[in-house]
Each structure stands twice: as structure tokens, then as C-alpha cells.
Length: 153
Ligand SMILES: CC(C)(COP(=O)(O)OP(=O)(O)OC[C@H]1O[C@@H](n2cnc3c(N)ncnc32)[C@H](O)[C@@H]1OP(=O)(O)O)[C@@H](O)C(=O)NCCC(=O)NCCS
Image (tube, rainbow, N blue to C red; front, side, top):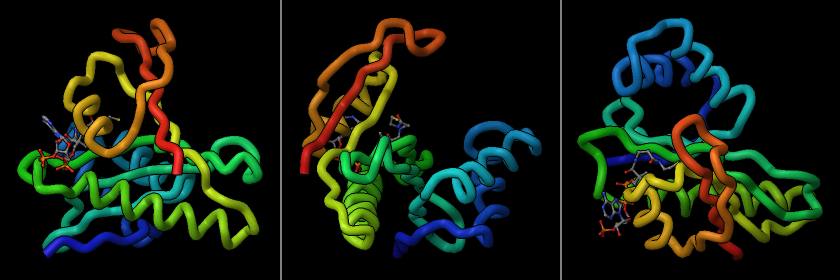
């Protein structure tokens, strides 16, 4: 069974170990990654058997009166893909961000994200999750253009 919950400082070791297993075995970068997710941004985790199998990372973009949240990152580990986990993480993020805005007297209006334009899997995923591709920024990334997607609520 997979649980979805907000990451806290107690999850830093769990996130470091996920980074070293899934991304690269580099202690310093793993710690920076884990601290960013918990201390700099807001992060929701998908957890199975006390291991992280997916994450979604977000922060409000601009003033709260704009009602815009940027999805900074979304990832599901190998072995857990195509099981609906990322779709559930996006739904959980929308629920959490909606509550975040309304608790401060505002309304969440738009989810915004940037992705590498050539990422065909992400393109299929976001299209299937009611996002629309709205703009391109040429050469934003070292090896690709950025594609900007939005979902209006
Ligand atoms: C993109 C990603 C987050 C999707 O995670 P996931 O948990 O496998 O996605 P879901 O199971 O919720 O997929 C929902 C729908 O998206 C589409 N989709 C997802 N992965 C797909 C793939 N590899 N090929 C085609 N369609 C795909 C399908 O329509 C799928 O529904 P279905 O399985 O019923 O056909 C995952 O592949 C990933 O971590 N990729 C690497 C990181 C990345 O690219 N992140 C996004 C850019 S920032």
C-alpha cells in the first residue's frame, strides 16, 4: 500500500538515500537535494515500505493574490511507474495547495510548470492530466528548449 504525505525534516535521510540510489551516489549533492525539498520548497512524498517511490515539489509563484503554484519537480522511481502514482501525487498536491491558498484567504487558480521540450513521457503524462502546453522558451536548458504547461482550476 502506498501512502501520500508531506515531507518534513525527519524525511531528509530517506530523501538522501533515494537520491543516492535513483540519481547518483554523491553524498554532498544528495544532502543538498534532500534539504532543498524539505526546507526550501514544499514536497509531497509517495511512500511504500518506508522508502520513497515518488515526489512532487511545489512553491507559490508571485504574490498569493495571483493564485499561481509552480510545480518545481515531479518524479516516480523505476519499478513504480505506470501505476498511477504521479497522477495521485498531482491530485494530492492540488488538494494541499488549494488548502494552503484558502487558509490565507486566497484561491488557487493555476498550476504552472517548466519541462524539457523533448521529454515525450512527461508530455504524455501532462496531457493525460489536463495540463496544456502554452509556450516555449528557446534554449532555457543546456540541451533543450523549455516547454511551459499550465492547468487552470
Ligand atoms: C512522468 C512521470 C512522473 C509519470 O509517472 P507515473 O507514475 O508513471 O505516471 P502515471 O502512472 O500517473 O501515468 C498517468 C498517465 O500518463 C501517461 N503516461 C505516463 N507515462 C507514460 C509513458 N511512459 N508513455 C506513455 N504515456 C505515459 C499515460 O496516459 C498514463 O495513464 P495509463 O498508465 O493509464 O496509460 C514518470 O515517468 C517520471 O518520473 N519520469 C521521469 C521524470 C520526469 O520526466 N518528470 C516530469 C518532468 S518534470
